[in-house]
Image (tube, rainbow, N blue to C red; front, side):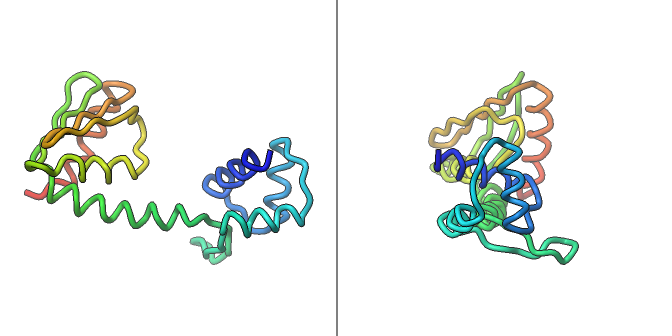
Length: 151
């Protein structure tokens, strides 16, 4: 039960603005978790949630994962632009051609970010295959990846 509750807390913090323990308590209650304020306090400590100022100047709970994702996003652009030679797609599959030996690094940074429509990736020595949910997703994502190419 505790791990399910922790998973739900992380999901709530990532998807909603949770400003107080009371906000979190109410959200958990709406999701079917009946817990006390003391339990919420322990969960926050165990999950290492911190507060960060939002765009309106209010402090809300965030996970360390957000900071890691921001860091990964900036690293993605650097690694991708230095590693990738070209991107193309056919159907719902994207093919990314990389410099020799660089596909694994580029793919690892791609996997560490959350891209809509990506089902999975497979990297070889100089090629990455990205399976997308639909052909439209593949076309959209290919255009997005082009932005990271250094020309």
